[in-house]
Length: 233
Picture 1 (cartoon, helix red, strand yellow):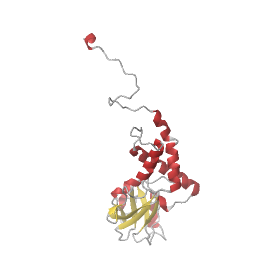
Picture 2 (cartoon, rainbow, N blue to C red):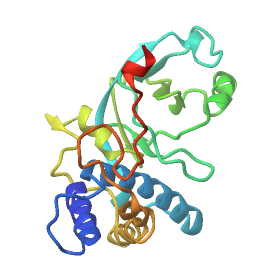
Picture 3 (tube, rainbow, N blue to C red):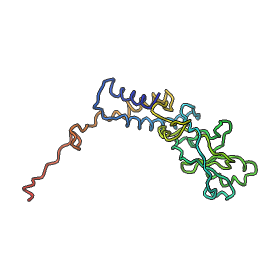
Picture 4 (cartoon, helix red, strand yellow):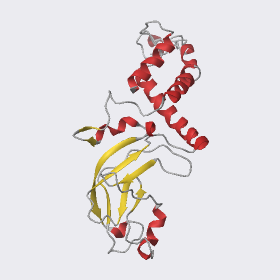
């Protein structure tokens, strides 16, 4: 099910099945609210059940890495090797006690790179057992790899706030998201979003007067009296 299909379904329910071009709501507004409700419901679902389903994830495929100055990365010594993604990652859904990044690994899918907090990076060079292993961490919207050991690409999956932001990422020669891509949400949450919008948020819209006269004033508003130009002279 695509985002367009979800939005058109909500619009038709809001219309009551009637064809009408005079709604107080646009498809753009519906899509915005669908994404907003999705982020909220995914956070609540994770807090309640504590698991992440693959139907909510999106795959960024191979992201290019670039070496950066380690001295700018949380006080690491200059001899440490650090790489980061060239592109900023999309904002993730705010899950309980964790970021919305669900997987970091090499493009082969065999090796996983553990995520750590940025404050834990400073102690890595002095860790007796794991100082030579790869670690991933986020600073702002860039993903950093400690001890990349020659890696030039990395695979990332996550639950992102706006799935449409993946349109700027390349996946196998094409965009990671387009209008025909399945919207990353399970069917039960689609129903919850539909009920929340139709029975809740959009119930206030029919009472809002429309501007049908194209005069930049809200219809139904009492007009202000015009001043008499001759009397003012």
